[in-house]
Length: 65
Image 1: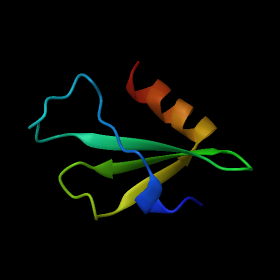
Image 2: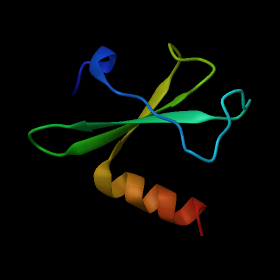
Image 3: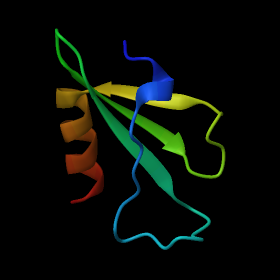
Image 4: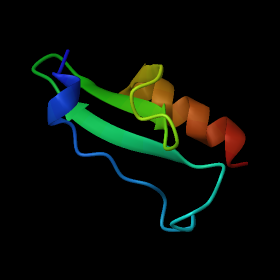
């Protein structure tokens, strides 16, 4: 797994700079597979979710339908 301090986090272009309900996403390619990390933009040191690339695609597909 990647060192979390080396990740480049980003927010959706649809979210405002001061929006209260934003998440940030970072993509971490590893030798075995790509992982996607998700965190609360208001609690950058809090809990994070980590998805495989396939799991992330399925998650986004369900919630963007």
